Length: 143
Image: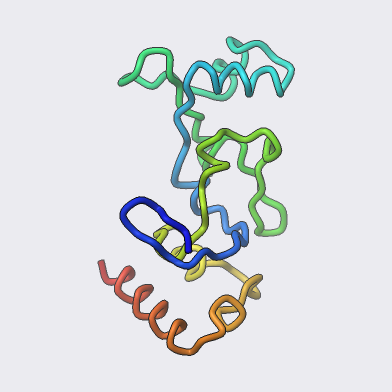
């Protein structure tokens, strides 16, 4: 089980639908900006100018820019998402756990185009669990 604070759900493997990276652009504090800029071989100032925008509610913090199709580091290859800085990605991205209690994951399971990378039967071998998931997806779609 994965604990997401107020909810606990069965973990699911990330199948790279990209919904979380399209919806969210993480906040970065000064230490994270220094770490990322060092890893990318650029100065913090250059990193902030190229990849972020100032976050107005917290001095010294920045938010990764939205490229118009999601996070500035989000890449697509034949309909599958990837992160161009995956090995050094921000901590908040490292901490993200795909789960059936995540709206983003439910949307990705529902909307993923083409043949599924992950079948529902493989994900949840128990028919009762599959029924509960389908009920949750239907309920999410109605809200």
